[in-house]
Length: 336
Ligand SMILES: Cc1cc2nc3c(=O)[nH]c(=O)nc-3n(C[C@H](O)[C@H](O)[C@H](O)COP(=O)(O)OP(=O)(O)OC[C@H]3O[C@@H](n4cnc5c(N)ncnc54)[C@H](O)[C@@H]3O)c2cc1C
Image 1 (cartoon, helix red, strand yellow):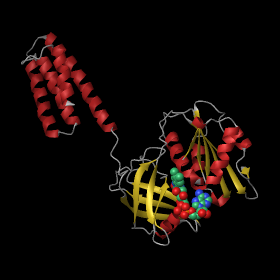
Image 2 (cartoon, helix red, strand yellow):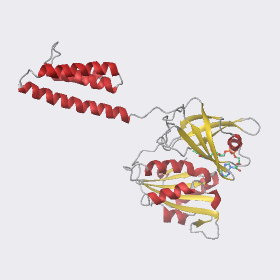
Image 3 (cartoon, protein in one colour):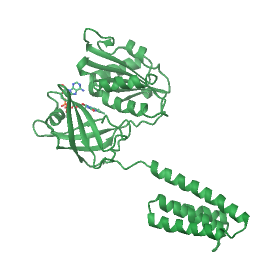
Image 4 (tube, protein in one colour):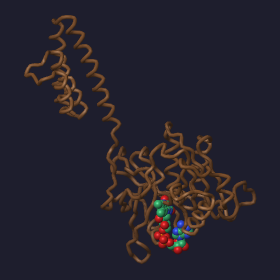
């Protein structure tokens, strides 16, 4: 930063003189001071700012023209310093993940949500640490199955990097599931081995006009993460249309959170729930997700929309066929 400031001032002085005019010297020192402060070099910054204030005193004895030139230079420098500081404060903090090596995170809370679903909260190294997971990506979790054999499976946290000091997983545990066994056995105080980020999908605000999301069961977690990121960003106007399929009403994951997001952002987020075995009173879809349901609830095929899929393999296969029949091209689809 200091180097760039010195260079630009050199351009202004046209020729690299040994003794530039006081106004330029003062501005150059101010740039260096701002840069040193922005870089966190407090002592160096303080010394340089001292020189700037000394220069201001010296200039009190100069002509009005010189004083005006200096005032302009100092205002420009102050603006530059503010910009530098802004850049620094908006710099993303370093994440806690390593894509090559597993790292250990302590389980600090485990809350059973239903008979086979629990929310796991893991602590990050400090209360202000961020996980560092790009929106749309997931982590690999390593554990042991019932026979003691190593198992590694992908999971998408329901928290974002705006949730400091922690990350959360909502896990559906299957009776015969290998990684399910590991999560079922985990107790508060145990450590989970995690590697990441992983995944081909990376969300950038405004990359599409609208998303259609087809989720089945625990396939809701990547959709939840992307939707939260969109809705919580006031400058992101992307629309989200979710079709969420489950067997019974009790199987619907994150229902409270999803419904509250629809209530808060009704113009941006819509959900159509589909159940194989609906309760007696039910205003959602019944059976498997059909072509008609997709046609009714999703944006029509277009270059600026995208359909995201995540569910059990048979559902993903059936949905890919429906989407193709409805005219959604391969480029318009993504499967997590
Ligand atoms: C990108 C991505 C993100 C994911 N995020 C999450 C998440 O946040 N939370 C979460 O709970 N899961 C998530 N999953 C699913 C997760 O990776 C595992 O597949 C799941 O936990 C089952 O693993 P397991 O080892 O316990 O079961 P396995 O040993 O693989 O399966 C054993 C048996 O369990 C049953 N089973 C397993 N998975 C399913 C299923 N999806 N539908 C119906 N029956 C099934 C089947 O009977 C199967 O034969 C995600 C998957 C992907 C690809």
